Length: 96
Image (tube, rainbow, N blue to C red; front, top):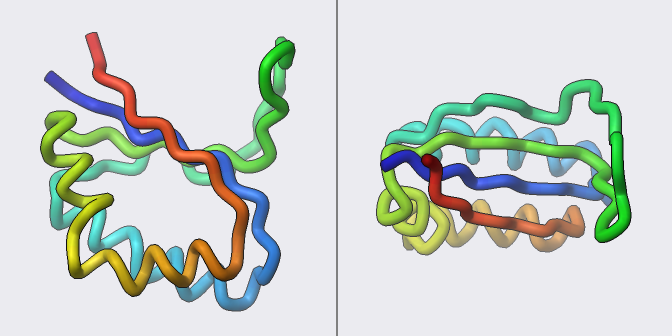
C-alpha cells in the first residue's frame, strides 16, 4: 500500500536549501519516492489546526520504504542540511 510523506517547510536559508533539494530528490527516488507536489502554488481552504507554508508530497510504495528513506544513513547528512536551513513538519501517512 502506498504511503505519502507530506512536508511543510519554512526555508530560512534559500541558497543552501537549493543544494538540499538537489541532493534529497535522487535519494528519495532511490527508495521508490515520486514527487507529487514540490512547493507549488497552494490555496489554503481551511486552517483551524495549521497554516502551511510550502508543501511537498512524496509518494512511496509503502510506509516501510518511506521510513527507510527518512532513517537512512545516506540521507542523514542531507537531512542535517534541511534541519539547519529550514523549519519543517513531516507527516507520513498510509494511502488507501
